Amino acid sequence: MAALNQKMVGLGTQRSVIRELFEFGKKRMAEVGPENVFDFSIGNPSVPAPDSVNETVMRMTREMDSVVLHGYTSAQGDPLVRKKVADSIRRNFDFEVSPDSLYMTYGAASALCCCLNALNVPGAGDEFIVFAPYFPEYQVFIEAAGGVFRLIPADIEEFQIDFDRFEETLNEKTKAVLINSPNNPSGAVYSEATIRRLAAVLEEKSAQYGHAIYLITDEPYRAIAFNGVTVPYVPKYYKNTLVCYSWSKALSVPGERMGYVLVSDQMEEHDLVYAAIAGAGRSLGYVSAPSLFQRVCAECADDTSDISVYEKNKEILVRGLRDLGFFCVEPQGTFYMFPRTLIPDDIAFCEKAKDFNLLIVPGTGFGCPGHARISYCVPTERAERSLEAFAKLAAAYR
Ligand code: PLP
Image (cartoon, rainbow, N blue to C red; front, side, top):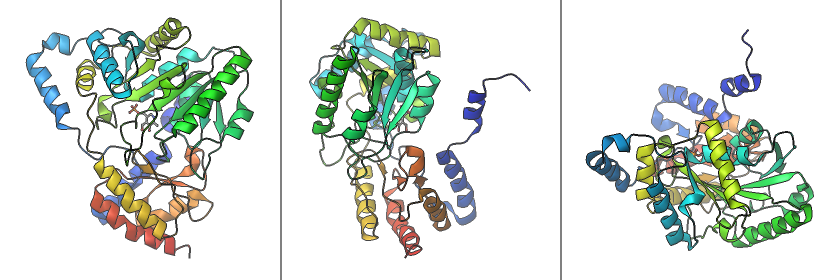
C-alpha cells in the first residue's frame, strides 16, 4: 500500500453526513419523483445571482483585454479590486480599510485556512476556540493547520454565547476565537451586546496573558439578515479582528469561489499579520484568486440576491414547526434553522424523517445534539408542502 498521509486519506474517503443525505435524496427522487422529496440537506443558494453579476461578466468579457481578464492577478488580488472592496466596506460599515489589508481568496473556506495557518505556531499547542453549533469544517481546518480545536457547548436557549463556559476555556494557549454570525446552522445573529462582551473578555485576557488573542469572524452570511436586523461589524468592536468574507451566498455564486481576508487596519503588528496571511496563502497555493470573479464581485460588492425568498421560507417553516410542537429559536439570518428534535437522539430522529422523504441534518455534527438543521434554500412551494411531511414525522412521536 502506498505510504500516504492517512489523515488526508480519511478526509478524502469519508463522506460527510450532509453529502450522504444528498446522495440518498437523489436516489429517493428517482424512486418517488423529485417533487415528493424534501431535501433540506445542503446549503446551496436557491435564488439566482442578481442580474448585475451576469451583466458584469458579459460586459467584462466583451470590453476587457482577454489576456488581462483571464491572467494571473497579484498574489493578494488585483489592486483595483481591493480598492473597490475597501471602498464598499467603508460605505457600508463606516469603517476605514486600506486595500493593502485585503487578501483575496477562494471563498471563505480558503480565507479561514489562510488565517489559521498564519496564526498557528507549529509545536506551540496553540488553541482555537469555536462555539457550538458550528460549521463542521472548522475542526478540519484548525487541525490541518496544526492547531488544537476547543469547543464551547451551545447556549441552546438563544444561540448566543455561553460566556461562563467560554471564560473557563480561555487560557494562555488560546490563540484565536472563531465566530460565525449569521450562523450556520442556527441562523442566529450575535447581538451587539454579545460582540461587546466578547471583545471585552478578549481585551482583558490578552492583557492578562501578555499576547493578542485574535478574533476570526467567518461571515459568508453577513448579507442574509432578516427583519432589518443589524449584524454588528466586528472590527469596530475589537482591533485584533480578521474578517473572512465570501460572496458565495450573498451573490449566489458559491461555485465561483470568491472571498477575502481582511486584517483590520487597527490590528497590533498589522503588517506582520498581513505578511503571515499572504505567506499562508502562498504555502497553501491560494494565490491570485480567480481573476474574472475578483473583478465581478468587486463591481457587485454592494448587491445581493433576492433574499426575500429565504425570509418567506423561514416564516412558513418556523410557524409551521412551532404549531407542530417543535421548539425553534427564530433565525435572524442565513437560510438555516435549527429546531430541537422531538427526541433527544437527533441521529435517530433524522433517520426517521427519511421515512417521510424529509432530509434534515442531525445537530450532532454541528456539536449540538438534540437539534436538526433545516436548509430552507428551496422553492417556497416546497417549504409549504413539506409541512405535511413534518406533521407525519411529529405524529410518529405522539
Ligand atoms: N463558513 C460557513 C459558516 C459556511 O456555511 C460555509 C459554506 O457553506 C463556508 C464557511 C465556506 O464558504 P465558501 O463557499 O465561501 O468557501
